Amino acid sequence: MIFIEKKTKIWIVSLIIVLGIIGTLWVWYVFSLQNSCDFNTLQGRQIYNLIEQANYCTANSDCVISREFQCFGCYNLFNKDADLTKIRTNIQKHYSGCACMPKCRLLSQEEVVCENNKCVKRA
Image (tube, rainbow, N blue to C red; front, top):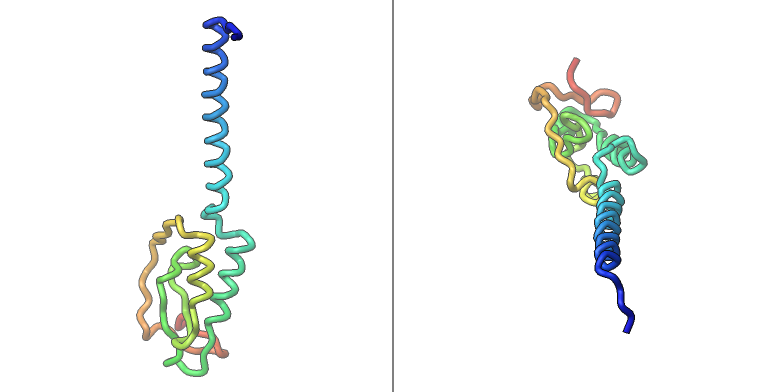
């Protein structure tokens, strides 16, 4: 049986503990990058594009206001019949841990009009 001095055992145990802490911090860092709340990423730009695609109209009555996706603007304007499933799925996948509470004035439905086939805030 191999005899190891007490000091050597303490150093080995200390080294294992330090390496364990470093490994844990590294894993936490890598996974925290995956749920980054940086919206200026490829995924964020794709969501902005999906939001823009859902904003279409032929009449004022087609337009609705949503504050559901506040991380992507104080309010978003959509066609009342637009399918928002893909937007919700992408936000849940890439930004589920992000909290967005912008301080914005609420729009009323009367302030939204259809101009050039887009829902816009009345000037």
